[in-house]
Length: 270
Image 1 (tube, one colour):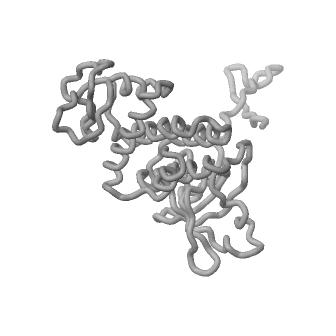
Image 2 (cartoon, one colour):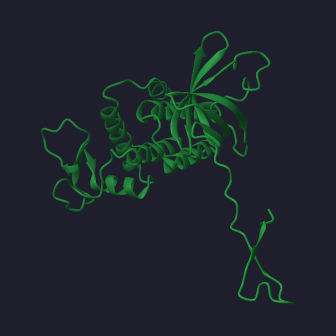
């Protein structure tokens, strides 16, 4: 965009034969949109359900606003522009208005650029969505977790090992929501976790040495080191991290069941 120009007087201005100096004006600021109107926000549909006769209530996961709820008015009508767009696992650009807990969806456009997820990977995607719906507070932005979500969908679409993809996402979710302790150090002493030594992880405090009386999952120090490093190549780490993540997530869920997890357990023991 061409900058507008303004005349700036100098000491020589007004003297015969001396043209005034010309300098660019400060760039114009873009017109701010009203605070209750958001345009072109990247996001995904997590879940939707019918509202009245022709509308939907939709749970969205957005890059800059976190999880929000919107009303998609008329989305169930046969000729609605939203009818075929509000699908899970599809990258969207969305606009909405409102400041209440439920905003009004104005527009949603498919962005593309991602492969679809299919078969068992599709169930894994629904599991990830259920975790976000149940563990993320609304209107709490988590841009890094949004990026991890996109990576997770891409890895599932490219047939990366589902158990490892899910463990990485579960760990990221707990860390980004501020409920995950450093697994490399014991609490409260701060001593480093040692491979070959058995530990349990207190959901509120972090690792400590295992006791005979512990009912929590017992894991090797190597497993805790691997989880922090994002390295799930060792079979022991894969097996123990599954039990540990299941335990930690159950604590955060307060015992609420995860519907998709049970289906996954039945199908492939994830």
